[in-house]
Each structure stands twice: as C-alpha cells, then as structure tokens.
Length: 238
Image (cartoon, rainbow, N blue to C red; front, side, top):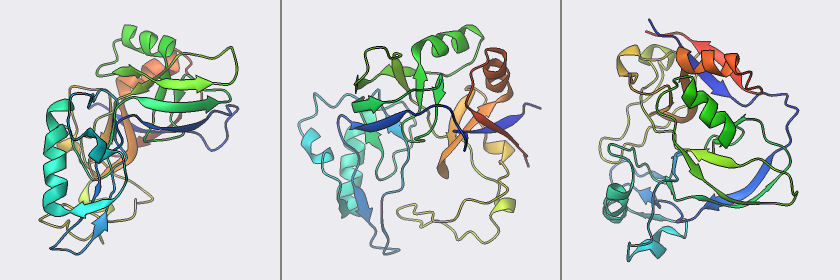
C-alpha cells in the first residue's frame, strides 16, 4: 500500500524567505449561513490558474467581506468555470497569480505559507523528471529586493481526501446547508484511505486544507534530489 506523508515547513530553518503578497483577483467572499448562523471563510486553497480578466463582476472578489448564502453561491458559481474541474471552492478561496514582494532566501520547496506553496522552477522540473505526478506550478508576480533570486512558481495544490473519523471523535457534523465544518486539527492525524486520490502525488485535505499531503513517490523524489527544508511525517491510514 502506498504510504502518505504530511509535508510542512520545519520549525527550525536556515531559510529566511518572507512574503508580502496577495492573489491578483482577490478571493471568494465569506458567507453568512441562515441555517447554522455561522459567518465564516475557511479556505486555505488558492487557484493561481484562475483568470478573471473576462469576468464583468471581477471587482466583487477584491474586497474581503461576508455575504448572505445565496449571494456567495452566485459568486462562487461565476468563477467555477475558471478553476480546475471539481475544485473545492470554500469561502475565502483565493484566485489568480501571486502578486507582491518577496524578501530573504527560499528553499526549493517553500511551504511556510500553506495557502501560498512555492517551488523553485528548477526543483519543479527535477521532480517532474523523477515521475512525480500532478505538480502544476504557475508564474508569480513577486518583486525581490535583491538582484540574485530564484524563479519562484506557485504550486496549485487541490484538495482531495479526508481525515478518518477515528482521529476526530468529538467532531460535530458539518452544516448541511453551508458545509461549515469547524474542528481542531487532531494531534495524531489519521487519513481515511478510501478517500485518498490515486492520480496525484501532492494534495491538500478537503476537510483541513492547510495540511499538505504527499505520496511515497513524492517523498522518495524529494529525498533523492536532496530538496531540503521540508518536514516529512508519515501518517497512518485507516
């Protein structure tokens, strides 16, 4: 059985990279649910492939705010054709290329900001040569203060798979109308093996989008290529 790993930026790092950036087209608004009463925006996923330039309502995504449920759904469905098929579009999902400034040094895989996962272009090419599947890197519009800097791409990491219920025994059911699913990440995560994708080697969890999960194929390639500064933790399956 394929092994799966939780990939994180390490607690101790020799890299100093930092970003002051946002996604060009903004984000889906938050929502106010008439059924559960929650006002929320919980997405950590960005879709840098999304191009809203032809969308007349594109300015409606620029200002963060909550909207009534029906208005949120309308705005969500307007951008659905512009993101990958089957993409999860939670309130707060960000859209378009990363724009802003970058300072410091960046590791080949830079996962300090889970909502802005970066990869150096050379590292991405080497991973793809190793046969790692499903990696899509998109150009950023980041400005560096230093002259010598790497070409940084943003990885579009889609949500698939879920945590197994055994590791979240106190988790309340999500709202049947808006899907609000509020719970604390378990200290000992277990993956629901039946929900895991078979077509990609890097993904987020649908119910905890800040958790980046890699397959054994990806981890073997990262280690073989000595792509440092990734904390790799094997997760049990059930």
